[in-house]
Amino acid sequence: MSDNLHTTPAPEGVALPGSPGDRKVGRARPGPWSGLGSTQVVYLALLATIVVGWILVAIDGGNLLTLETVVGVQQRSAALGIVAVGQTLAILAGSLDLSVAYLISLSSLVAAEIMEAGSVPGAITAVIAVSALVGLVNGVVITKLKVHAFIATLGVALIIKGVVDHLYDGPAGRVPESFQHLGYDRVGPVPVSALLWAAVAVAAWFLLSRTRYGYRVYAVGGDPDVARLSGVRTDRVVIVTHILCSLCAGIAGLLLASRLGAGAPTVGTDGGYDLESIAAVVLGGTALAGGRGGVAGTVGGVLLLAVLDSVFNQLEVNSFFKDVVRGVVIVAAVAVYARRAGRKRL
Figure 1 (tube, rainbow, N blue to C red):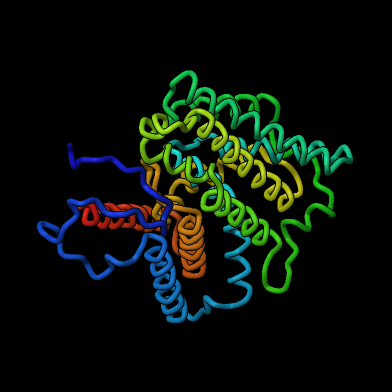
Figure 2 (cartoon, helix red, strand yellow; figure 1 turned 90 degrees about the horizontal axis):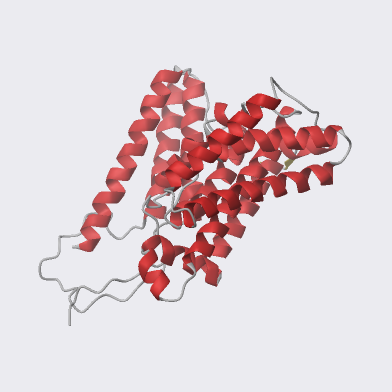
């Protein structure tokens, strides 16, 4: 009987028993951080970034750790954080979603126009319905038509772009002041938008770690063939995952509409929420191949990007250099995770 048994990866933090062949002989010597998970690594990197950023800003004559700066980081990261949570679900299932940026723009426009007509509950319901429909289309195209997730979601993104470009030349609709509290109000030092992000993240964490669906997501992302042979309805898992991912994009669209006071046809693409959300997920240690990672790491990845932005803004660094540094950080993080994963397999 072959010792080369395939096992489905467990959620991060859940240990699987080692195979009989996993002995000390031939194993690489563990590195200094070998006992740390990817979530711990990203939060250590976040702490290091805060310390180094504080020193650099202090040398420049500023102060990074003011209440205004901390609140600003929370507000700027909320929309990206919500999208990144949804993107985490898709990537864990071995997929991804490039349509989220255009869906955010469409959601903000739908919400603002219906709110202008006088119905906030109707606007929220419409955004949920549109987002769920987009996610359903993404999932069905990927699972039933067997189109790769990259191409499928890119195609849907272009369809949404065409609709938005045809119907809107600029900002549209109006968000009432009562709904704008979502984007600007605070509970003490914590913005309401950050609380919304926290609620979405906790719900996703619970779904992944405490439900059968969550374990099926990891199983499908780890090896869809093994999951299928184990009785998991892989197509259904992927479709539900894309619906949830699109719902997160819709929520982000509502949040941005509340901050802008209107819908904007470029609010999603200008923010780069498609690639930024994937970058945050990768920074958080979730494997692009799926099956390994979690929401806690994604939260750390989003905060890391937000802190970097805050440091760059206070130092008045030009946008070109900001993009270069962010790119280096992302590539370095992926290299570190790949190296650590390789050592664990030895």
